[in-house]
Image (cartoon, rainbow, N blue to C red; front, side):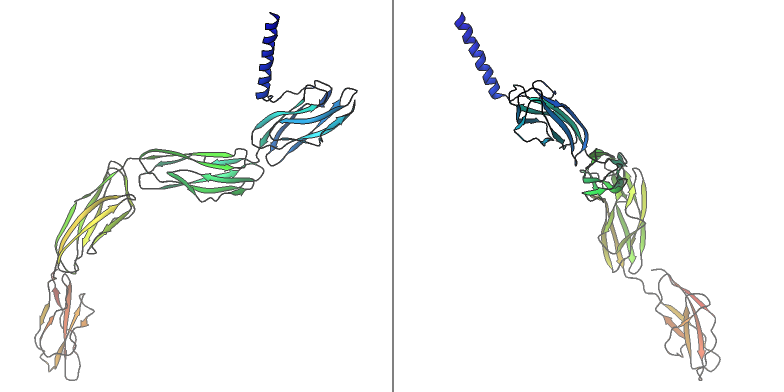
Length: 425
């Protein structure tokens, strides 16, 4: 029985040694003053320290026994904390003291705690000094507005909103980046940039819907401020796709004289959802559109009338197509047709009684208003008592007078006025 107990004890000892060889000691966070080596203080609280700065606190070591103690090693279990002014090995005679410093230079903007352990000769237990501190960045960055709602935005359109970032702290703040993601994006800001205390920067948030429904996203601004990541929520509502129709779908202008024009009306209608027409194109210069200001937004159920004019430039059949487009696709088109015919040739024939006086000829005058002014038509005085005016235009009214010229080239007053109404082509 005795041999068995000893064997089990050896097995237990062997397992303990294996455990120690595979696992390192866990950090010691509680301050301790056990043993002859004493610390004062044994717990250091550094408080808040800016990331760009450091803070130093002093520690005094004392040897409480009569024989000497030698500090041989420093074991540090505290990121961001450093030991300064402690040259190893350090030997303290009985009753003697020595001071050194622990410096905290934070590596991140968060709370950190740990321990600095001093291993000395003649002691089985390391002297543990607990340390703690919090890293802070300087400044404070605020966003205005805190959230952006673009409202209802139809497909094919874009909306722009302003956004501001303000340094509401007491030190400079550096903005490293400002980002967003589809279908939102930002413009008007160049990072990195530095804002002095109280300064602001204004930029733009954009939204261009790609699909209908509810859209959400955010603007993220990263900076050196304490609140290093500022997020502005973004939202918008995109209605479903609208349908655009033209009535009538085909316009036939019939026969129109070359040089004249004819206009017909057409009507646009939006159904299902609102739609925005961004451009219009015509395949022939003989047809033109008026009364259709672009871009044109129509709400669901809304109508808009406009005019198409046919101006034939030559005889023969003419055809064209009118296409109306949104920012993303062709919304509607209309077929157009007409025929150009040669314009009718008009003339005005004039005749008058001969003058009872001795004359060598007559001059003919024409005006567009009753009573003149009049312009002479014949290039030379003519003895004939008739004249044909072939330069008239259809649909116009003309006024004529005649004068008599004697052998001394003296011209009489105007005759009575004659009116001629030329029919339209």
